Length: 319
Image 1 (spheres, rainbow, N blue to C red):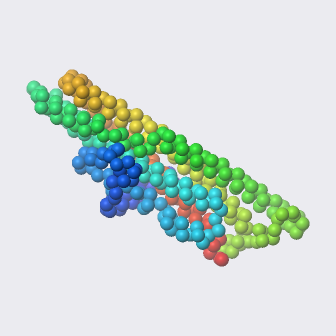
Image 2 (image 1 turned 45 degrees about the vertical axis):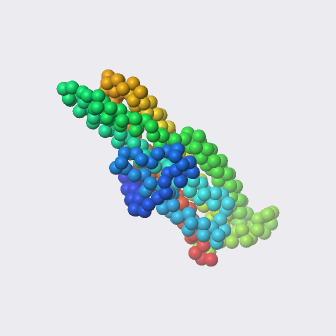
Image 3 (image 1 turned 90 degrees about the vertical axis):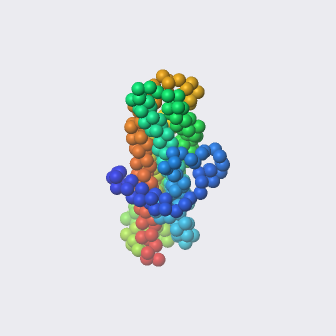
């Protein structure tokens, strides 16, 4: 699987732009919690166009895969992998939305920084100028933390489910390959007809891939699914830590912004906004880094899904 971050992110962002050309439902509709998260951040930024990315970014698309599953003889664990990868894509969707919503909300902080610099440059400050800064900080502090969408508990639940599936995939793969090995030994010894429980139809080569038996094809599918899931779990661990750090940072910013609004003291106001200014570049870099990692995760999900489908479709071609 690729580690070319710029290429992977460029492809995903192109898909996001294409998705953004169509209107989407509100975030409240997606979460089923009307009014719990305001969707009117800084006026120049809209997030509704980024909703339901999972419907457009998966390859092969889930509806296509569902139709194939009806006609293909797939092992239940392989089907589970495709379902779990869809869940991971939905988690990435929420992460991208959280990043973009946070970038949008941060425009209030940036306007407060600009206003404060003008305040510092002025020979005298007015109550109206301070009020304008407090209004920007108030707008930021009143909005729900976008990273509430991807809580630590949500990541933990997803990771735990993925780890259990990974164990099942490994166990089934090992069992399948042991059976293949025993069959090879039996064939080499000329004992296939006497081997208990090993039927001829199981050793029949697969059309389209005559060098592999059905058990070997299944083993290859399980192996690809396990590899994909292993990489996916690593992505989830990294994204979880980054999202948790950003959640804490936003909460810290909201707390200090609210403190300024409550006190309305110029000294506190200038000091807090100075701190925002000092950390703003690093904060935006953290957001971009998480978005890049999320795009890479989406790219690897698709690479894994396509690889498994290749293992599935090659044997089917000769049937």
